[in-house]
Length: 98
Image (cartoon, rainbow, N blue to C red; front, side, top):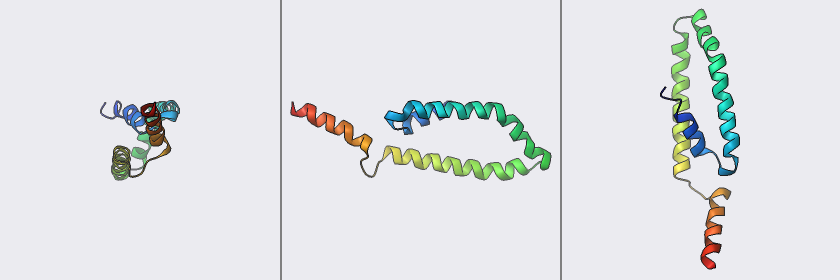
């Protein structure tokens, strides 16, 4: 309930504009796999040991959240222009010249 709406928003914000549809499709497939395989894979560690999901889950969630935070930070403050950034600037320069 908390993460569901944030995933498409993060994919939309971080994907290059030219490939945004492909990224959204891949995200949709990943969510579908999560919904179909998640319950069986999520309960399997309980069969091995009751604490195993916590022991493995907490570090994985921490690493994933730090990685997503770093990616969002880089997307908000680009250190150098990329091809996607240069194209709109070129277009506005040409339009200002006319």
